[in-house]
Image (cartoon, rainbow, N blue to C red; front, side, top):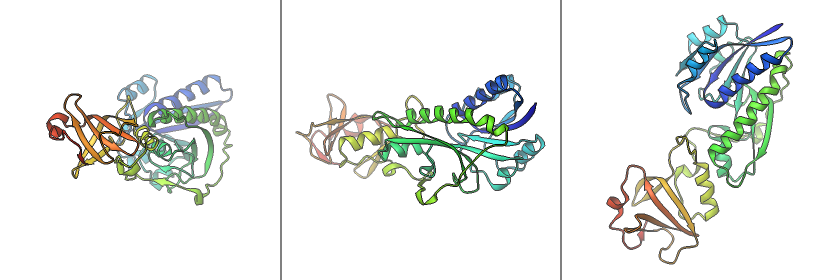
Length: 314
């Protein structure tokens, strides 16, 4: 029986699911065995699963939580354990060449976007905001160019009209795990095929790139605003970006509970703001209706806006 040694770097649901796929593969595969030698649990961003290291230990898998993977210690672990493939899933650390070169074969990375489009971060948020009707996920060889390695496998799927950032992330995980399952036998056979990306079609978003810098624009119509809101929605999980913002009298406020009421513009004009002391709602004039704000982060509406009993400019 041929053994292939894996290590993982990542966190969250997709890390768990990929490990489960390997367990299932080993139970049903004749002639191949994938040995998970080590798991580096990425603490840098995302949905950190505090129970994961303990549960991995119960399954006989060694792991550690790492804030910085680019270290001599990590390289030593990968080499001493004779890791063939380092699998990067939901990993937010940029790996340097020394780490990329440490496994005997390669580093394989999962990206929740249809490369070469939507490289970088927050691919699902940007796809919704950009009004895409299709999205995709990619497995690729990792190179020093971020999300720029040769593509191994890719899957495309539709974006629904009600899609939020978190529902699209979950769709991407399901598709990514499905592709991973199909790749396992090819990995074991040393039969991975790949092709170069067409960088003329590349789009890339860094951590500093946020749709409209995170601000609501009063000139937006209902459809554009709704896309913006869905692009920032990670409910019931914590927001991976930050709550959408609005600027009032040169001060920025983060919106928590808010809704665009289409068509009701009789008593308030575009860009005006008024506070309803009875309903405890802050109303802001939009191009096709009113933005009703019920909750602002760290701010009591009545105490902050009670003087705005008649419409004023935002």
